[in-house]
Length: 319
Image (cartoon, rainbow, N blue to C red; front, side):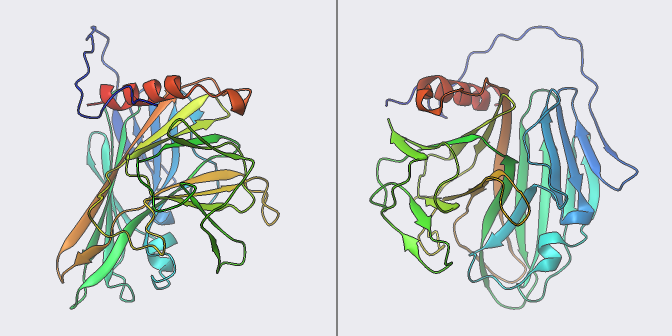
């Protein structure tokens, strides 16, 4: 399907006078940082690995409410990176850095040789939220890691990923098997559809973890509470993506998981390998957007042109 818009295209937006919205960043009595612009609401917990606890639009929450915090960030590759509990879920330092911005900083972690810094900001109006993770090499030798986003979106939704013209995967995606050792490079699944240049995940697949190598740089998740959660992120076709299958995106979809009844679709943009010299750093930035969107009653009848137009409008109007 022909793309309706391009990121480089300029949008013509009429500017109307509105009353100023009170904006603020503040600490709560629970030690969390809140960014609030009157419509969008973000809660950050330095005590829980610097995670995003809530991201909402006009009272509707985009993230699955889990106690440990659904807005997680990490480093990879998944099977190579050492244990890193202090980075993953330890107590971080938090600070308010501006009217609607905050920074969280991890401890220095000897096993990985890094310290992580995350800078968060919310636009004064609208839903645009920006998260930048910086990997700082605090060791005496080069380190080689990548950005790994691990966001628990609200369960029971539909995920759409635009596909690049070329893929290294015969069916445009791969599926991890439940044994933790096997990859299916030619999977078939009744809850996955490839249509008009899109990968559509309509429900829990046979096995929850999937990988894609799209370089389009965005995805949209349709949430059952009539909300569209859009992620925009950079991709680098000429750089090395060094997860075992070179993926730029991973998805992990479960419904009423037996161990804890968890339902979520984990949205995971993945960055390229970063070769970081001692004392140097590398950063990766994601932009998040929320839009009102009526959840499709029938996943078979998803209007791809409408969703594409809505997603690009959200990304363009925030520029």
